[in-house]
Length: 373
Ligand code: FNR
Image (tube, rainbow, N blue to C red):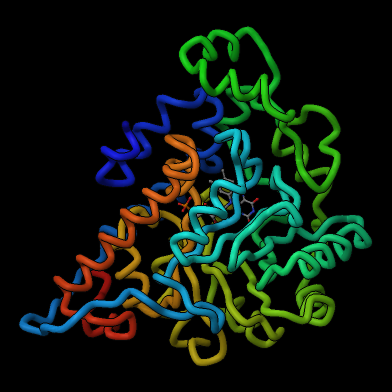
């Protein structure tokens, strides 16, 4: 059983690659253009240096709060589109594992499960603002009605990034049966069996117009004229906790605070949008200095170990988001795989905290974590 045997997220990733067609794995794994940001997101974590305190003693707790609600560790599962393509159980499997583990899960606007159909204790809803504002307001109302605890506005996607792997693979959503996919299917029979025998793959909240390239869907639907005025509009319309995801500068973090956001996610969309933007980890400390007293700061992109989470928190983040890591678990083994991914991160975080001499999340600070030049 590859899920049980997995000792690291790298192991889950390897198991995932064996389960799904190449074009699906590439859709998850890939970044935009030359994938420079994708690689830098990871390499930034290699700059981390811990300065441990020894002979500390006592018990370790990874518990914290996120947007004022208790969380078992400083972790949020990020929104990812079209999740039922990665595994037929899709978003409900991810939400189930997140709830069991005691961390929030964010449903994407591009999801394959309707907001009302998801069960969990701390569910966030990610919003893309659509050209059709009536439809946008509708989505917000549905999220509110279904008890979502936060709204996450993604702001790094005025147009879809240039995902070269998807173009080369000829990926469409839903996937089309071509010669290439059929040949690939022979080695991934279980995935294909589920695709052909379960409910047809489709976006849950809108009509995707048959079978389109992922980038065409965004180009058609998203409003590229979303501005800071819309953040204030959302602030009013939604009323609850508002998170702005995709902030990539100190300047914009400050604007988000001024617009009344409760939190920002420092993020380059996992390297899938603008290539060669800053590595989010490197923005954590400067942004914490700028607005750390006004809103919560989260960070994502390249978090692959519990040590990475400890580092981000030590530099000033309230929590990390993960995208690909839980999708590796999902592709490798459904809900159990996602649970395993979170458990690995939690165990690694706890071990790192002991080794660094931090008994609580608030003990992780810039005395104990720095970035080497
Ligand atoms: C994403 N991401 C994303 N973000 C968002 O706001 N709405 C979305 O629909 C999606 N869809 C999506 C699909 C897939 C397959 C991936 C990998 C990512 C970005 C995601 O929320 C998050 O910012 C990154 O995944 C973080 O980087 P890591 O953890 O994947 O390195």
